Image (tube, rainbow, N blue to C red; front, top):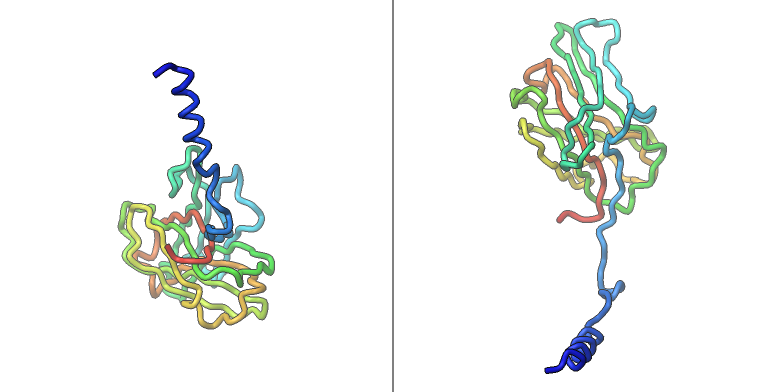
Amino acid sequence: MRPLIKLFILGFFLSALPLAVNAESVTPQQVLWIETFDHEDIPKSIGTWEHNVLDSNQGIKIELVDQDAAGKKGGKSLALHFDVDSSNPAMVGCWIKLENQDLSAFDTLHFSLKSGDGGHFRGSVAVQFTDSGYRKAAYLISQIKDEWKEYRIPLKKFPRISDWSGIQDFEIIIDDINANPKEGTLLVDEIYLSSSIK
């Protein structure tokens, strides 16, 4: 078969194929990123708190480190260096301001977490949302390993919040009752919300 005829047949065949998938037949997953931590410095929207600032035996410090849960080149995560090893009730947290964010279109929280201490963390930590009425709803996370794990939590697991249209902040909380050991490092990354669980 002559080259010109071959080219004509190939062109006719390609022209019969659809150029793109019909957009109306695809429902993309809605995603809202809360934080990827890929910054040069910690933004002002991220901070920490301590239950008793007068107790020198409890505290938390945060820093950006060159470990990325998604394996992005140059990506970072947030290290939480915590200490709740106190004779007093001890609790510390890291907050991310959401500034009255409307999350009502989403149903699942995603985030990645790992131990920064070689897999020695055997306790639990809490993740918490605060709504526009300053009601707080928390959920305990356990089985934290020394390798990245993505946690997927349906928002219905935070039943104290019925109105997701004005969320004030997201927090990670470590306390002396649930932490084991009571001093160490956790890494968090890739926090986002989606409209469905895959």
